[in-house]
Length: 502
Image 1 (cartoon, rainbow, N blue to C red):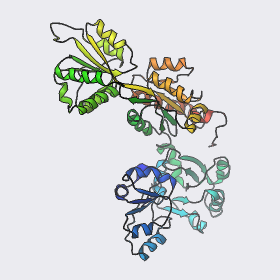
Image 2 (image 1 turned 90 degrees about the vertical axis):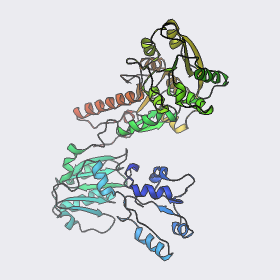
Image 3 (image 1 turned 180 degrees about the vertical axis):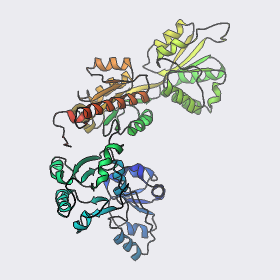
């Protein structure tokens, strides 16, 4: 089965289907490990071994191959082994690097040219014949001999001004491309540090990269971004950061746990059902989750909110309610915070409101801002601990070292508690790391810990925070290009960081 060129999202639908049915998977390379997400739980995984014997025992075995298994691979010998053992086989094609890497590099391999030639430099080649082609050459397995290949093409009539691109880490966030010409190849590759797998592309199509490059020009391309949140909270944020070209790494700083004594929540749910409250105010998605779990425990569903007014502090909390089947009656139109919620909360009116009580299912460390504001408006609040937030365990040593040593390009702080807890379990981020915060209060906490705030969201949501970081990254990139420099990630600016020469 073809594993594709590197980006796990380029796997074919047929390949994903086969992985989902497989009894055993033989990885062709460590880079194929992310593809195991398509497999069933308990699938047997091996990096080598006789997969033919496994199949002969009745297992459905998937053998992963780089790119397309029918292009420069040992599939013919492996198929012969299957035939000899009377094992049925299927060859599932994959997206080949020869086209995918070029597309991700912004190079149109066969646009406006009559020929597109793919070459395996590991085999003996007639470079005179290749030099005569009027189209694009894509060369596999040639990075170690790139300079001599360039000289051979020039010696056989290819102009030394012919554009050349060398790209490694193709279709992944490690992709790195150097554009040169046959005559300058030696000088431009001298400090680039390329290793296999890499592709060499020769031809006029390379010149169109400036107009068509879309992947390596993403605003956060290759940025290693720390996301200090709980796993449940970070999923959408991770997807958004990935769309900007970033490499997000989740480091939980807060663990959400049930309250030590559940009786208070039990009484609150009973009161909610029996009509004790006029309003229920949710200040976090975790509060929605806690109430939902209690409902399920008692065999209730969203219909129990009938007749109640429901408020949400922000968009993320409102979405959690909608997912539960509840549409909020009140959502701040301005600042999405306890203050913003109080600013738009209606005062208690004994003529209009038959009940003056509000249920606030919240964390054990919540501030008194909302309670004080609602009390001033004439409401009586039942402030109930729906869940506890405790500091998570420290991350592994390599993560801690990367945080303190500048290995991360940016860190996103989505609350004051994430600042306090990250510093507490892992130490302060390095001064080259871009600090992005969700709002003024989080910025204040970050500054109290001696951190320089570089980015602040225009509204307090994780999505807005990721967008603000992307805008910051885009401006940094544009400034470097305007100055005639090669754009560099923040982590590349720390002392001792490896420099790549364009």
